[in-house]
Length: 460
Ligand code: NAI
Image (cartoon, rainbow, N blue to C red; front, top):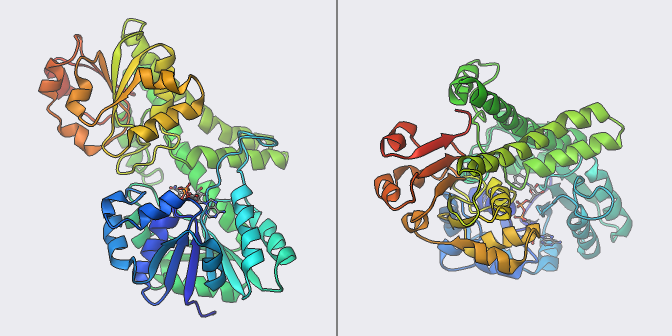
């Protein structure tokens, strides 16, 4: 295998940051530089106060504290890091295209291509290029073509090494991955990356495949995971009509080892930057090959997810006597799941947007998400002006105060702390009847009903 002394990672986001921090912690003999064009993000990664890291993940600060300045560096000097590296991870964002051909479906590969072109123009020595970002199947061929045609006679080997971490448990997932997947064409390059992971991952958990299987496996994994959520969510609606309880159904089917118990929790719908984007991408790819049945099959996962968010909001409106106009509704949670400050595609955004269009007044509390982020999420939708969003939406730092005088509370994120609030006090400071709409099935029905709440949970 090749000798790797220096690694560069392009993209210091939710994947690049935690992933390369763990590699650095586990491989003190390799110098790792994570670069990004986002100056504030790099400054935050370099902040002396570890509470200011741009990504919140349990366990992350300890790892950064250990490796940063030793063999882990964060920088905006992309060219220098590329030039010095033997191996380059590309971990930039690959959002859904919002313009042109494939708008709203295809992955936008402009950031990836920019990286390839920058590497090609800067590189003076041979390098292994690792696709860490989630990419459409066959992207490696495009990368290779760009690198080979604009380079300086340098040899590039391309590997696909998709990341399977889940936000909220990223560090745990990185330290003990179910599997590390490495796809490639050149055995020596594959062996080189395998050797790096062998520093902490058992051989049996390192899987090598061809490039295309590796690229497609990541899209497929996310499609399957999201599909489970949409499947149980579809059943939750049926439960509400029939007197079945979705938690009971979920438990009953999950005990079948062929089905398994994970990812079977009904909710207001999945969010996060990946599931929707990757399924849309899968659907787009299938359609581009004329595989309409395949495309329609996976498209339904998204349709069901959108329906679930809408249904949750509709139920709030209907229950509040068919109008939420001028009523205070408190959102507990804005992040797309607990233990992360990431809000991308969070169900909360869409539920809020829908209620705001009905002139609700929303107050939001989330333990890790800033007001700035929340307003940016709403403004991004362009449903109403930034001024209107600020007039209708309040963001507060105190959950008890958030609930004061509210007509209803909606639980949008499953943060543990919500379970332990002083619900007695909250109840007495709310309007009557006091409604709770639990989009995460987090709270205890009996306890809340005994306190006098009207409690609604999905699938019951
Ligand atoms: P992110 O948006 O948090 O981070 C991407 C970073 O790349 C940004 O900070 C951006 O400024 C930087 N960047 C973009 N173009 C650049 C360039 N030309 N030069 C230098 N920096 C550049 O995105 P995130 O969440 O880290 O995702 C990255 C990739 O990993 C995506 O393809 C995503 O699908 C994939 N992925 C994400 C997971 C997640 O849980 N967030 C899990 C597994 C894979």
